[in-house]
Image (spheres, rainbow over the protein chains, first blue to last red):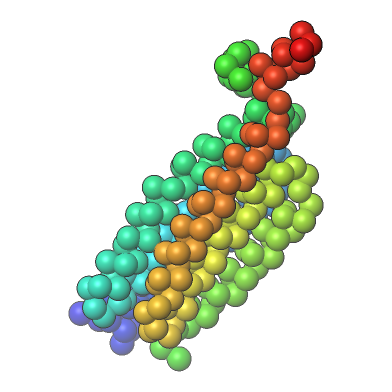
Length: 116
Length: 101
């Protein structure tokens, strides 16, 4: 099955690569533009992981043997498992070391926590 | 140029622009946590770039590069978080300092 002379899997892989790179760009713009460390972490953790995951998914789709497809899938699963843990650790460390919230943030549910 | 290498080429330039933006945040800070977040994003970008190289060249070893970089990026971020926590005095430390030895 093909479309415009290219097989369908190649079209899908190319689209995933392009969208993944765009998500990486969105993550970088968010890291540069957002107001405090927690918002920046939200950008890099979600958009960055999605972008890299889409690129590796395209690789799994386009690879010829099952071994490299499994390797790419394993990398995606590893990214999905570690990104929340890393973001949680950094956010906790930043909050405890007194990182300032953006002045536009008006909910701080940890402000009266006394466990640190 | 066929479709997939063309997409990989365009995506490489996009990732280069993203890495440039993340490097700006890495330089201007303003805190250690901001720099750790920027480094984390840079590691994820390099993982994506290694995937693109594997896609464009067909060399399988880039996949191992991507996996190992994801691992080291995660461990580096964890180390940064531990470092930020350990150099910040906790409430118990402050209370102990107020009471005196």
